[in-house]
Length: 408
Image (cartoon, rainbow, N blue to C red; front, side, top):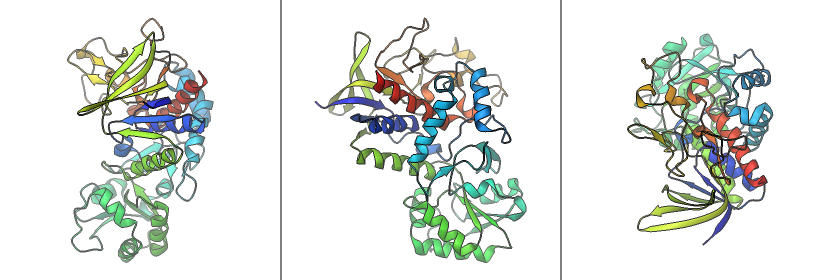
């Protein structure tokens, strides 16, 4: 039986960040997950806190906001912790495909719904979207590609739009991953760029669905900009997320290169807990049950979508360690009266409560598992969707959880 310094349960952004941080500290790490995590569904940019107006400097805005929300996961890390974690994340993505902020505060980027949303770190393939102006922008959709409605996006953004046939016969209706792989072919993107150039009427910016390659998106961007003579940017769209897949694959590539082990495809089916500490986990891969032991564990399984929280008829549970979950008192209070209520639904604040070291605690504040940390969206007292803080919470708490775990 192989023993590890740390087992990370969850393959989303929080779990991957924790694993990379621990590997960087010299730990022997196992990452366990049912699949590739929500990162590959929704990951595009890195949101820290969309509530901060673009004209407000991020450091100032975050510092004041954290002070006003002492129960929020960011209060565990502080602004300094968030900043350190974000810097470490950026180190995984050197140029040419890098993530950066376009100013000292949030930037507004176009979305696949034709709206503008605030975000902090932007991949180079989306950076020009922060500078676009409607009168100078052409939105390009592809005939038969149903995951991006270019005509709707252009209408709402008040830009000119065109729908182009793909430059290869019979490819209408491709999936996003298949189209991204085609973009990695130089001849395909050169022909696409020429098709776009022929439709231009003096535009300086071109918006495309976020499918600019999986292997080398920066090269795809450069080709299209060279052929069209305009600044090109990706626009997020329906899942799966190609930018999210890029992030996942980059993490996985580095983790494997540095000796991390992955066990993907099956969930944790049991845990071995003794005297307030976890000694190991079981993974059921029919007909076998494999046992893995470690000195420390990080729980980063997400919320309902990732299976980190389960909603039963009358309560919400955490299925791996059966940790108590902060939640509304009864099912009738999980949701507000209106779906689009200005206030977030109470269920959105449900999650695991921890101490300052991210160890799960009960209602009386007692530590439940001394060698287990929780990180990411499974934590209580945040509203990541409404706050636009999901990636920031994942990165900051995953980073801190690994640091605290290995310091113990």
